[in-house]
Length: 173
Ligand code: FEO
Image (tube, rainbow, N blue to C red):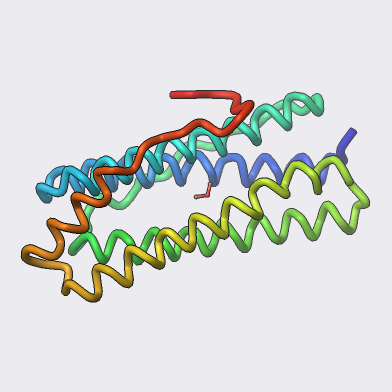
């Protein structure tokens, strides 16, 4: 049993995870349009991961007996200067997600909601990995100058990313 306040906060965040999925799906198409097929793959894998995150929140809320609410979705940006620009915006977005997960955890602690604290643990760890991956790519893109042969090398590296559904994940799309 979770409080209405906790359930509302989790619902808000669930929608932010869906927003993240759509943000990265659009980025995938932008990378594809730039001729960066590897980066397009990387963002598509990220889209699929975000759909898993969204479904984790959905499943947790419905398991707790909540009825979800979904607001109309906002238009997403679909113009980027470069792959570096996309990666910097990705990291900024993930920093926001991390802050939100931390706030949710703080709320769960204050409410002595142990189940929600346990649920959120997975996301705390996941955010460390996501931010780290983004920082690595940004550093490499800065090294090669975001143009020329170097970027093709990074694009090839990004092509290697494979989607792996987490154990017990509620959805593999
Ligand atoms: Fe679902 Fe990228 O955090």
